[in-house]
Image 1 (cartoon, one colour):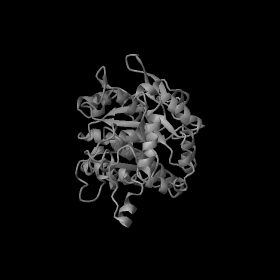
Image 2 (image 1 turned 180 degrees about the vertical axis):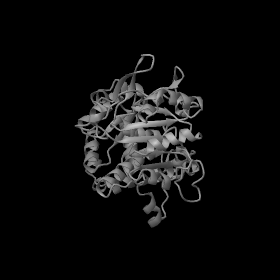
Image 3 (image 1 turned 45 degrees about the vertical axis):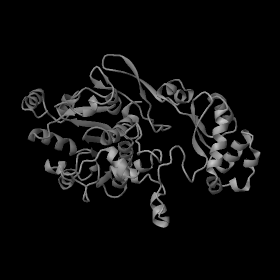
Image 4 (image 1 turned 30 degrees about the vertical axis):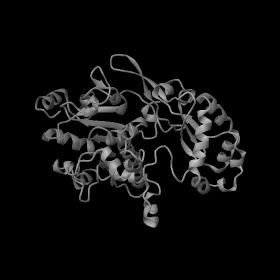
Length: 399
């Protein structure tokens, strides 16, 4: 679908910063039609270009994270580079930045300056600890935010150190909060007078906001949730079990009616009709007993047989998917969760599909993450620079 027919078409987004949180927020905007100009240092650009698995010297992650974006190289320490950035921001709708607090101010681009330059601008500021407080000047990656925000404390098994998930979940959640905040600010601007505002997202707060009932449980009962492995105390039964053929299945039978159906298909009518087990609190009191019953049932048969019976009884369950499992799964394929694209040398490869799916104006990937500075000439030409002026900027190190 052409960018002009997408829900964010007509919006101009300028992306400053590197790696994950800010660029992921900008990627979502780009997938849904916004013009996203990614400002990169001429000296190598975003370090994400060299993260994880590299293909011909460039990260495969980069080709996904920067899809639909335009790459502009600017040296922000050069006065002409800074002047070009100001020209871009003068008519931008959104600025997304994830520098350490104070960096933009040192460049002479504090909020007071930007608001005077462009009163309609919405500025999304993603950082480790926010722009205020005693820790605001400290560096903070997603892993630090996950630790301080409470996620790491409860992740893993009680007799082992905390573990992390295998992805940068803290950065990604912060990015989602940033996009939500930006869209709310745009809505306010549209309805209430045309002025922009700042959206502040701290990585640790992005995680903290996801911690469910942690705060009132501690405040009211002094209860501190601990690491509990594969189970979730208070939500029973919901856990991972191992089948006869050594494979793993997640079963979520913690709904009252679902639990009853589950017990009936495993031949435990006594548990299905036990008055104490009709609600979650009663089941949780007997979770060790219930998990023992479920463990034995799953271990007695193959994973495929387990899944067949659970599906027939409409009990939520899933095998633990690897990337290989996903590539051939009919649900992933039916939902178009793999997009075909081409790497710069023409090699075909698959990218993850677009989320969320909109019925009338869906997002899409029009091109993959570009080469460093691929759109510099185009963007500068649109700003009124001719070929000789662009050559001069390159010669002086501004771009």
